[in-house]
Amino acid sequence: MADTQINEENAESVKMALILGRIDTKLAVLGSEVCGVKEAIGKLDKAFFGNGKPGIIEDHRNLEIAVNEHLKEDKKTKEQKDKISSRTWAIILCIIGAFTTQTAALIFLFIRTGTIQ
Image 1 (tube, one colour):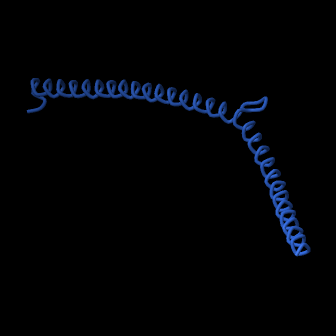
Image 2 (cartoon, rainbow, N blue to C red):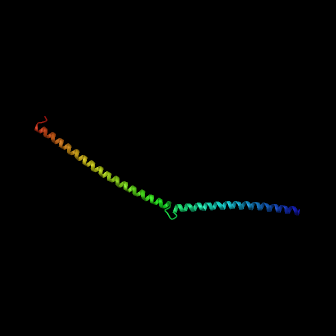
Image 3 (tube, one colour):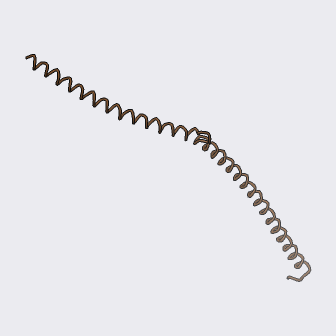
């Protein structure tokens, strides 16, 4: 009976040792994975905030500023083109009006002088 109790205790000790061994190996794997995750987070942090050079945030700000400046310049250019277009139309209408007036005056003159009956 004492031998069976010792054998049971030994078997239980062996089972515990195996379980602890598995736990240790799983903890080692988990520790290496955590280390890899820490390295990846460090790299992302450096890329995001910059590591002595502009990071993603700074690049985004610069891009946003450049786009806004481009949009302002484009708006100014369109306004200038609209002004030029308006001037062009005003000149064209003046020329057409002058031509029409002169033509009407000539027709009136020809009718009055009797050239056209």
